[in-house]
Length: 160
Image 1 (tube, one colour):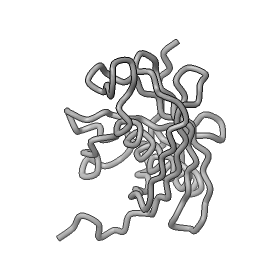
Image 2: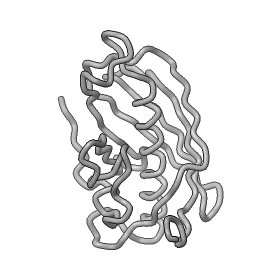
Image 3: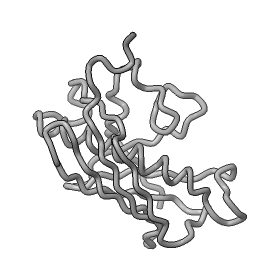
């Protein structure tokens, strides 16, 4: 069964910050990862395309790293947005995060013919920094584990 994220945090990002190759809704060539809540966990669903092949039958690891990266920053945004009293779809602009660190551990080869689900648990380690523990599943099998430290993006980020 194909799952879809109804209320993704990336849908709420302002246009100026919606061009990320991984999760930017305005990047025509990007992956368009979308992250939302599933209870107290975060989830991103993605189906790899044929061009994401590493070797026949398996997903390229860089795609998975990108999935964990964007899932992590999106999860941090969801967590702080909720802490501030909002949910995606409320109309309030969510906080934006950047990756401070990314760790990816490949547990099993990831098949490229199934939908992937990144599931995250968010840990606040500072008011402006969150750690997201992520597991990526192909069906019921955990193929990859990752961790992102996400830092709140300063207001001056991207401004000359």
